[in-house]
Structures are given as C-alpha cells and as structure tokens.
Image 1: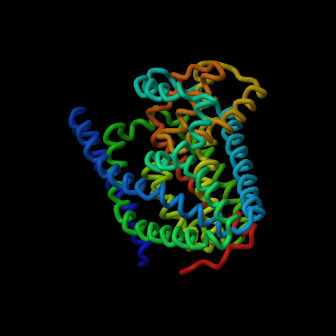
Image 2: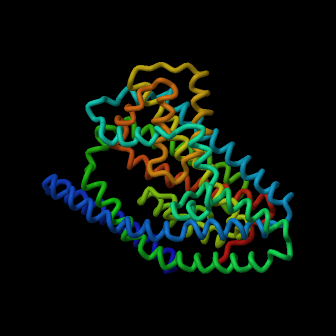
Image 3: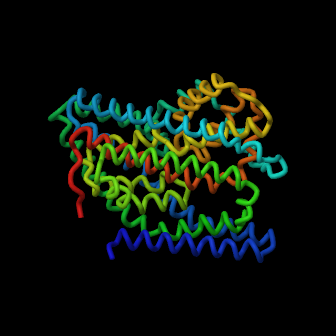
Length: 414
C-alpha cells in the first residue's frame, strides 16, 4: 500500500475511533469530566494545527514568489492572475446564489427555535465584528510589516507582499535568479517537512472529533435536522456543479484529481481547517501534474479569494436567521446582501470561525438581529466540516483548471 493511501486509512480509522470515544464519554461521564476530557484531548489537535501553522507562512511566501518569478514577464503574471480571478469570482457568485436559492425554497430558518440558542458563544463572535469596517478591511489586507504578518499567519497580507516581491524579482530578470533559486530550494525543504508533520494528522483528527462529540453528542443533529439536511443538500448541489465543470474542462482527468486530493479532503473535513492541508495540497496538486509555478501562484490566492463552501453557507445562514425572526427580505435586498458577502468575506481569511463572523456583521448591516447566530452555533462545527472540505475541492479545481487553460497540465506523477 502506498504511503499516501496508508495515511488516508489511518485518518479514517482515527475519525471512527475519535467519534466512538467521544460518544462513550458523552453518554457516561459527568459534565465536569466531559469538560476536562475535551480540553485535554483537543491538545492533540492543537499540536497538529500548530505544526501546520508553523510552516504555512514561509511556504506561502517562498512558493508564491518563486511561482511569480518563474511565470516570467508581467504580461504572463497578469494573464494567469486574470484567469484565476475570473474563476474565483464566478465560483463565488455561483456558490452564493446556490445558498440563496435553496434557503428561499426550503426556508430552514422557520424550523429553528431560540430555545436551542448558544447565547454565550454568539456574544463572543459578535464582539469580533466591532472592528468589521472598511478601515478594518484595508488594514487586514495590506501589511505594515511582513514579519508581523508572518508571525500572526495573516495569509492575505503575506500574499500581497509576496506578489509585490515576486513581480519585482521577475522584473529584475537575471540579477534576481540566485535569490529565486534559493527560495525555490527553501520551498522544497518546507515541503519535505510537510511529510514529517502529516504523520501527526491521525492524532489531530482523533482529538478534534473526540472533543466535539464528547461535548455536544450526536443528539445535536436531532435539534437541527431540517437546517442541517438542507445545508447538506446545498453542499451536494455545489459539489455537483464544481465536479461537473471539472469534467467539462479536465475531462477524464477529473476522477484522478478527486483521488489525488482525497487525503487533504478528509483532513480538512475532520479538522475543519483549510490551513491544515495547504502544504499537503500543494504537494498533491504537483503530483497530479500541475506545474509548480502555477500551484504556488494560484493556491495561496485561492485560500484568500476562493472559499466556495463558506460562500454558500454565508447566504444560507444569513437568510435562515432572517427567516427565524420572521424578517422578509425582497429579492433586491437579497442580491445586495449577496454582493456584500462577496466583498466582505475576502477581508478575514484565516480568522477562526470566519464564516460566522461575516454572517454576524452582514446581519447587522441589514437590520437582522446579529445575536441570531446563536441559533446555528450548536451545529456549526458539523457544518464547518463540510464547508471546509468544499473550500479545498474548489481551490484544487481552480488550480487544475488554470493549469489546463495555460497548457501547463502534465501527466500525473507516480
């Protein structure tokens, strides 16, 4: 069995074991014991995520700079970037529209009651929206120090700096080749580190699922079965659309792409962290046949601008909250909300529970009680599992499609 297949198997075993242990603890332990258990078992996930976060910033910086420099002249950079943005904007709008259409058809918000609301968690998230403004967006977008951005893992700021650095290196040509080669070597060393870090993935997955099931139990699904099933239907529709477009553009290579990214998808699903799979996804997409210069340019941009699963969820959740409060929004207002979500969601990439922060801020803008996010908090972790995996699928597909458009998609490496 290949090493990558073994890792996938170990992760699936860890998911089942974690869910089983969590359920046993939830059913048999006292609340105080459950609290101690979930705090301690989550340390396994914390260790894994911190190891991943350790290599995210240097990997994004080195790969993006090298990717832009290898693309060559600014005309090529602009062409590839333009194709990427065309994909990102189109995919985001489709995702938002799917959420908006489904929430209007099925009205999941009418089945939610305040008796299940998580008020304390909601107030904590609403506090994060206080700095949500145009000024805050700009400050979050442009770095004042690359070292500060790297220290705090501000991916969007690192992307901005790396684009400027890479474009400048490309413009200098021969003079910058030595430095670009050094960054290229550094990026491969970091990717080698990925292999070591990924050995901790099953432990991280085990800890994450054991903690959440022990705390919430499986019964949380019963309270929100209508909301959750309609959300899954939306995710299912989005996957059909994305995979369908993938088949149209990539043809027979599409099943191979899905198989190649299966391990990153499972890790993203179980840890609810896109960051956790960024290094591994970079490696797998290059193995699929995408040129390293395309992967290192498109993937970091996608992590900031192309969150398909989160996009679908934002319109779905915002409208469901409005329905729960009996607030009617006409189509014009809903489309305006869609465009607002399209823009504001780009400003908080990397923020924990970013989707809910954006939903709370958007609700406030449209006079919907922001405290309404308390209605969906109890089940948000389970929704997050599906939207995170969808984000990974969307970014993998974007990278493969742009590679194909550029004529840079090679045969899969063994």
